[in-house]
Image 1 (cartoon, rainbow over the protein chains, first blue to last red):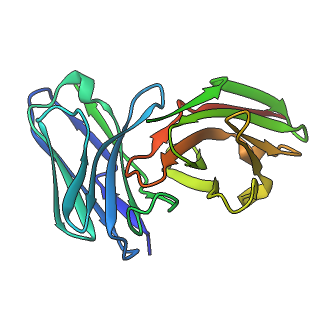
Image 2 (image 1 turned 90 degrees about the vertical axis):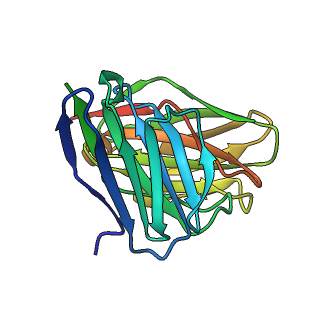
Length: 114
Length: 113
């Protein structure tokens, strides 16, 4: 009964490949997020969707494309992977966009680009 | 715009000692403030949050934080550290009406036996 789940947990791939990370939440939340955590643990928002609509799109290379097929799912597709994409990617969700609401994080996907 | 500064990337305490993790924020609108904890190889989970109801906020696992507007601070404390408290702690801010949560750089807490 995991609240926010991500697959895969680990991803090792070669430079230039295309890969996807999937996220699902069973909390009934309207808002979902993708964060990138670098090797120094710095956490940065990449994208956010509310009711399948993109509401946050930070300065991220356009090789990264999020897709939200429904409110419970938010996937991240990465084209032409580069060494600098190596990081931990976290999915999160919150009930809505109301500022004081808690975000619930998935366990992370550890991406290593060789 | 909002920003968060966590003073000290690493803090080391002895088991049973006071834990104090410092967080200062900057916000052009009334802020909501959060402390999240990240255990090794896990996602973040909420410890506590300030939503303007009370300036002293109690959270899980015996942690608490006090919102001090005059000092623009939201420091996290726990009277007595336990080995299980060893983790990465993140302070975060979100502005009223804002969509984006800004996280601090994190403070790694070490607890010595």
